Figure: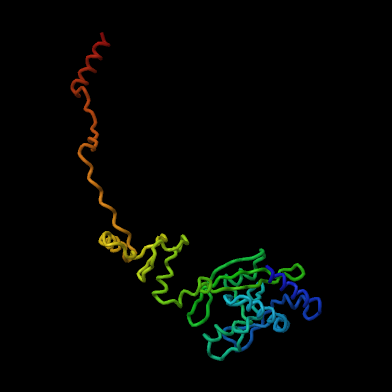
Length: 279
């Protein structure tokens, strides 16, 4: 939100100083740049944006090493100026390289781009898959704040983070380090209840810590070995066998009491009662 207020001040100062008019700032006549692939566009705000926006964007990007990019985007998804690492000149014929490295002056009218540009709330948090070209997708999470000029909504400021960076870069760990790091439950953050953790540690779907048990005394070694064998490979331990109930403690099976009178006796009683009423 502080970034949105700072950018609003930059935009309004540009209009107040006469560096750009309010009509040029809100220009939506996107002119295609010939020979660009993916297609790039120009508007009347581009020349002023190339001079005024990069210093703020680069300084804001350097504040957090986990941040992937931070850019301004208008209501239609047009991104005039990107960070320097994504603003290289396009290479003719190399669409995959251009998609990943020449992302400025493009229109990102995908659902995430339009949501960021048209959001007017205090902030918007969203997750999406970022297309980096050549079939490569990177999961991102970003925070978007609106930009207003003279009370008029211009677009939004996007600050994006890679999800793998937020989780601590788990992809670079070795299998043994990955197994050891799983001592902490995913759903219930608590330390491993065992004194030592073996490389064969695994966590079940419900977040229960399961591992090969540490060494114990010789008296309980066989029992511990049986339990460890049951829970190896992430399987639940076998249930304990049901103890036999003594015969004296068993309840007798419930039986329905038979009627006192048979069907014949019941019909005879009904007939005699009928005869008695006729008399």
